[in-house]
Image (cartoon, rainbow, N blue to C red; front, side, top):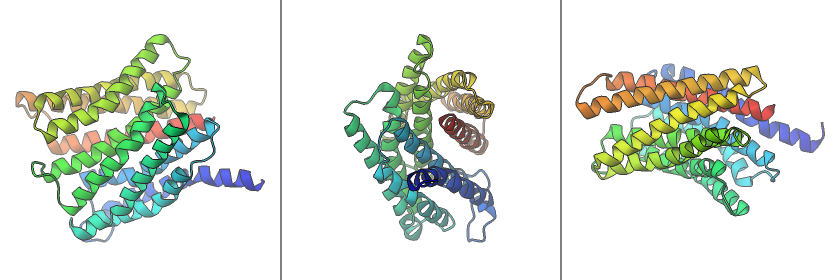
Length: 324
């Protein structure tokens, strides 16, 4: 193997290696010796899935897209991938400490990584001069990540806007990382695979792209200014995006030659649809004043579906399609 091929191999293996090690750490996190290990399926534990497992896979996918487009490897994206293991380890340490100045300081490297990813996305958009609708979600993913990292900093500092409860701040960090980053990557990945699909599937995917990008800012604005209509529209857009993406991702899965990739993508699609249904039921219950699903059950069930079922299986499925 020559030097260039060896470098490419190591660069591509970085994401899988980091995600594998991170997955083992994530499973062990609730039993780590510390003052306050995260409880299984708690908000803390579910969030840690992002830096330890989902982020290295999503960054690997973005790097491979650059290879597919025939561009030179992005130095900024490569830097972010190299920083990810250390930044994730510091985040883990942050969640093993009580909220405060020390815990907040440990999130700063992650914020730096997120800003590097955003700079890589902006640089790529400038290079292309025009962003295709199929790639709009990929650009949005890289923009939303530092927003989520800023909310994460506030979460671990134990601070936040005056009208936001600590739970609202933590949920903002979760939403901007999962719905804002990894889900947008999956929307963009699916759009890339539908270029030769039927016209109605492509139209549906365009609607999914718009809803996925617009839903999160609507939801955030609705909470920030106490506007129920904006919150309802935001939740509705996110739920529609998840349901629509489940349909288009299933179509991509059915056309995949790899049985393993097909299995992962179908699992991701089913998980996304179930998570959207659960969120919709919880939201309607809130509107009519009925607690059909307790907040603890909602967080655990929705979080596991989104993290393990939708995000992990979706990213692995698309990475397998790239390799094929």
